[in-house]
Image (cartoon, rainbow, N blue to C red; front, side, top):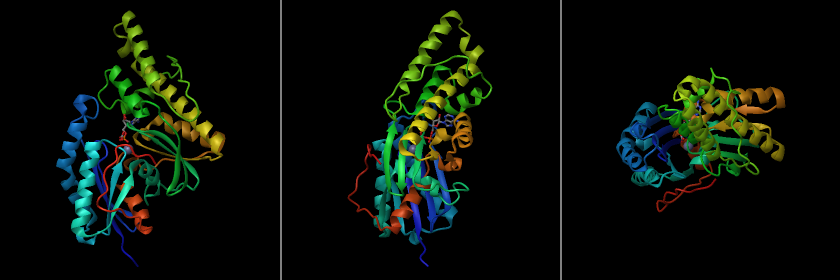
Length: 338
Ligand code: KG4
Ligand code: ZN
């Protein structure tokens, strides 16, 4: 039997990551999350690419070491070609190209958004795998997308955000509330103890399956400014209720679009990925819909929902089986649709 060892490299945003896969099974999955952005309240592209340059060699070394695999054993190198920040993508792309060339093994380019969806097929991602066709929903700080997935490499985007990503909305709202970056997990935490009906925010009207979160962000901003005029302690006194109300609105927006997507496609199987899939409100909503509407929902292990290289490596594995290789003249692509 053939031994296929794939090294995955991910550097599209602010996480430098590498993973090793043996015949489709995860041997190691290393992520270096860049802390430098915290004090700026968001990702600073120039700092991100510099940090990738510093992290990439140690991260890959560690991935190989933990896997107990030598460079010479590798069958191919899979890397994120895009979409993402150009300066960040370039670091992973150039490194992957040189390494494949030096080792004289195939190079495999991977679309980051496709990888978020195929992450569900990592061997230990979850107890049950999605069945085709399903709806792949990627929600994170950088993405908000609904994808109809007919097969591993047959997928199309049927809805996406026209402005901010859902995680971005969480983080911007967190900033307005004076919470440290990223605000998403904290808003989720406070929301658990608040009254979700305390402050109703209007949902944006967006056609079809697309999303918009910038209106909600502005609505929260104006609401807070108005209330603080009357009561300078408004935020601290109402933090939990504000968080719960904001989260309720986001969950309703997602639910509306998912209901619509299920209706339009006739597909009731939904696989969620991206950092925001950790959200308790969203998880509860999905569980309720399984009961109420017979949906089948999937959320992979946390480490495979946030940016990681295991998902890049699994796409690399499938492409390796198809001999879908690329040559070393390939360049990174900041905008790269599925
Ligand atoms: O996938 P990810 O780690 O990075 C990218 O954006 O690519 O996602 C991070 C995003 C941040 O915006 C963070 O605030 C959000 O996911 N997030 C959450 C939760 N956990 C992480 N948002 C809401 N509720 C959470 N529990
Ligand atoms: Zn991502």
